[in-house]
Amino acid sequence: MSVAVVLFTSDLRLHDHPPLHAALASADEVVPLFVRDDAVARAGFCAPNREAFLADCLRDLDAGLRDRGGRLVIRSGEIVDEVRRVVTETGAGEVHLAADVSGHAQRREERLREALASAGCRLRVHDAVVTAVAPGAVVPSGSGKDHFAVFTPYFRSWSQVGLRTPFGAPRAVRVPDGPASEPVPERSRVSGVSQGVAEGGEREGRRRMTAWRRQGLGRYEERQDDLAGDATSRLSPHLHFGTLSPTELVHRARSAGGAGAEAFVRQLCWRDFHHQVLAARPAVSHADYRTRDDRWRTERTAAGDIEAWKEGRTGYPLVDAAMRQLRHEGWMHNRGRLLTASFLVKTLYVDWRIGARHFLELLVDGDIANNQLNWQWMAGTGTDSRPNRVLNPVVQAKRYDTDGAYVRRWVPELEKLGAPAVHEPWRLTGRERAALDYPEPLLDLSEGLARFRDARGLE
Image 1: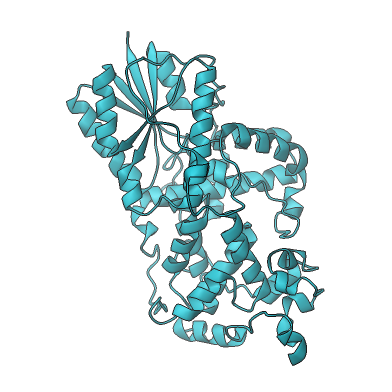
Image 2 (image 1 turned 90 degrees about the vertical axis):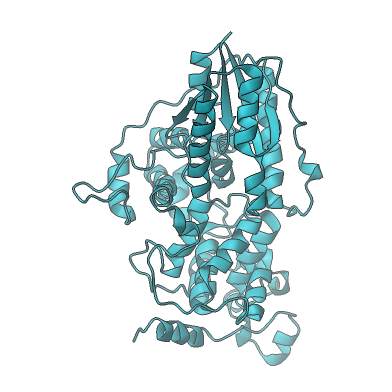
């Protein structure tokens, strides 16, 4: 009997899974394989919140395969060694893998290809699994450039690409008896997990997708920045782990139609945009996309400010609310991400890498493409066409948390204050402020703006 291996990475689903679909079409038996990669652990990417969500995803994937007569094979170690070991154990002729964009993923593919070729096994890499449109599928015409550096023209070209029709989940998966598996991990065995981390897995992702399409998508355009309304899809963790297909999400949104669907598709395109930038420039995971003469403050020169920002004790209520949501849920509203990043890099003038690293320590949806490049966008070292923009936390609060409900939810010290006092507690009398047990602002916003403009040589 012919055997193929499907190496699951950031695509932990059965619906719309091109590598699995191709393997089932080409082989009599298939080994669904997930390797807990030692290199990922050494890089410090195994944050507790993501480990907990991953445990849910693997358990659900194994259950889905067992419903179809199969099972998930889980191994730990160096990923190339483990894949080759499974190939040797089963006599597999092909390994199927979803293409990915990080430097680690690109090196992994190269090493797998070499190792498998020496074992007489073919590596088949499938595009448009982790993203809706493959990186490099659209490039600026006539420019000789290998990627788009500006979102709007990318969106125009991306929107013209004909997406493949999503595959359904397979009815049966026949797995050979031979390859042994480690036990499926359990969330309860992961320590240090934030209290409010959502449930993972494909079934939960599809439930959320269906509910979102019915109840939230239509009003997304008008409500996407409503912090207290919590009116975004919250599907980003499922996209990060691949329990949902971005291609299927685009199809479903477009079939619903309307302004809300168009706005949501645009956000999915932003995700693809960042992936195509990282695919072309892997170094931007740690280096500036656009080099500037920034003299960032660091842990050595701004330790107290950085710690106050991490703890949600900056004295600016909306910033603090968002940072506390992050610590509690392992997730943060996109408007909050923009604001807290702006406050760290522009108001406190701290190196964006410090903020990006802290987010990756907590975010369930923390992936290199979106996290690092969104931080660079806000720091003015990335693809933003207005690199010197600064978000004022008071203005943002009055615009996107008008009555203060979001702040009161996450900053209980201020729960008795109404708007606008809840956004500017420093305007209260000294006695009123003392009763709050809430810190004074770290600095005046004008002071932070002046320092940033001076550092950038702006008038």
